[in-house]
Amino acid sequence: MQEQPVLTFWDHLEELRRVLFRVVGAVLALMVVAFCFKDELFGVVLAPQQPDFILYRWLGAEGFQVKLINTQLASQFITHMKVACYAGILLASPYIIYQLFRFVSPALYENERKYVVGVTCWGYLLFMVGVCLSYFLIFPLTFRFLATYQVSEVVENTITLTSYVDTLMMLSLMMGIVFEIPILSWLFAKLGFLTSAFMKNYRRHAIVIILVIAAIITPTSDVFTLSLVALPMYLLYEVSIMVVRSTERKRREIQE
Image (cartoon, rainbow, N blue to C red; front, side):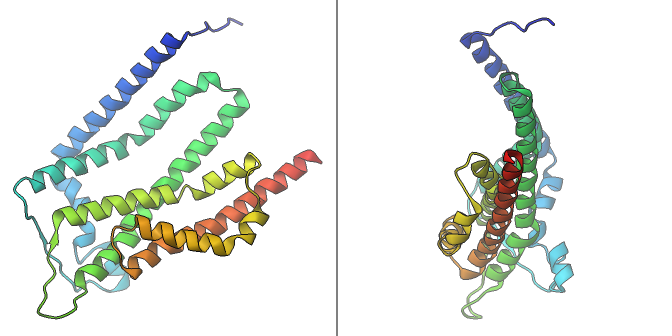
């Protein structure tokens, strides 16, 4: 069996440079593609604003119309570039993960490589579930509630495009990150830093922390949106308890 040559620090640095070059190239290429397909891109982004969005049809609440406006000269062009950049990163994310894994995998043992592949796949899947939950459920309900809420009939709601896009992107990103809670819990349990008993005993404290985090990451300050964000976080906390308990059970079986 032929031994692989030992790479120096500069060899690793050169390989990292190639990885970063390929990642940036892929993101830029997909960003340009997304920018060129403007109608399709904003057809997806602006879908929750339409009265015939799938969630509104499912709830039987299609009879509302909210008009988006633009208040600055270059705002629409800047928003187009911003959304295309987000889309490029999102579309290139599987390739980015693959390139990073290729870079670090030579330094891993076979069993470590197996764990890294599993954690990466589950982490990416949970992130996308969080993004989809935000897009199809949390953001549409938040948008419909806030865009149609009025303190008086004489006060008309006019939502800016920038406010709409920023809220959608921020909620989607934050929910994707929040859905990594079970993965982090499994990792800490694997390292022996976290136990299911600890999580059960401090459940009330966790609820307070969840509400605080939900208030921080929620773009708006209303109770409705905060509740929509906090509820999935609490459910993920309960799922994390089950994940940690399962990890402890497997560890005991191995020790026996």
